[in-house]
Image (cartoon, rainbow, N blue to C red; front, side, top):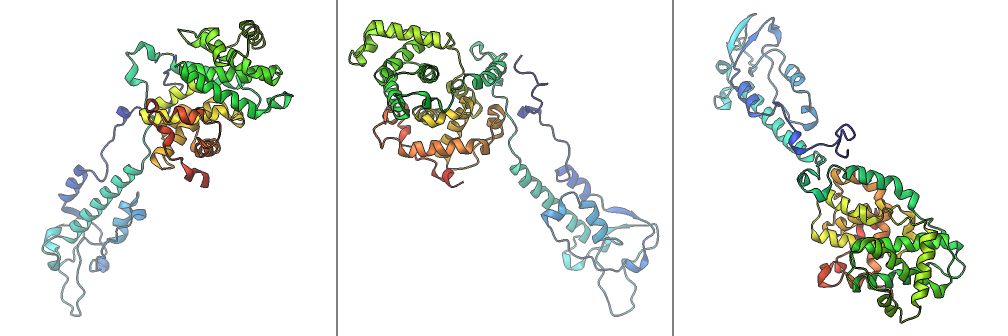
Length: 414
């Protein structure tokens, strides 16, 4: 399961690269440099005295055309013979099937270095230089990010690919309609945003797990899609959702009375229990759904993130939890776009999405761009309006003050 190479033929580990000898290798140059004696047969005597032109090094001409150039540039001789007005015999003229030493036909103006050897070595040096440049331009191979966790049972390396594949398969079936608010007659998108912004602060106050927050928002949206609610009961829905999420994710669950205190005792314990019963029945007890958090952890590992990138990525995606319009994106796309946007914000570059990230997320830069642009706009206005719970949370020392990072504005121009 999981790590089958037959299922993922493109997965390349860095240790699997093996290169054979190349034209630009030192061994090749050494062999060519010592190959001074050549056998020439059936040489046309009329072209022996032709002047050998200097080779012009050009990158486009050198790619795969070394042998053709040697034939075209030097068809009949290996040395440069100067043209004379007299009829003196050419010292480099040869008879058929003559074996010569090119050092005997060296150009006097070249300091005793044979022209053929000089130009050949120059060309080989240029080829080697160009191959080094091309190797720098080659994209990094896909890295097996699980290879370092083979001995860690908590990493479940044997099953992780199957787990993520299942989450991808089920994320679309558990997504809510991006237009479900049209069926609500007494609440709207702004009320939803106020509720979730408040719940983010409640979540932070109780120091709950990240998974709890994402599941809370998911429960709210899926319930509101199936059940109409009046506005004075909307906060009760939020309190009940976070209570259910805590029972599913947390080891220590907050008391109902503690949650009621946060609502200024606007509801009774019985109302909370009744709403809890209604919610689990409407959702058919289906609480195990893939949220963006599941994909965030996997994709951050693929991005080989550090702490700053991780915190900034979570800051960006929590900004999206408040925004109703982001429901049109599946959780995996939201997670990938948040990491990509955070990379662009930190490194000010459009080319931060590596082949490894693309392989594990299954999203290219072009597919992430639309979502990333929206995230940049949320980042720009974070902390400026009334709904600034996420911004205050990530402006603290505990979260590295990442809310103060500069937004990746250049993405808006792409």
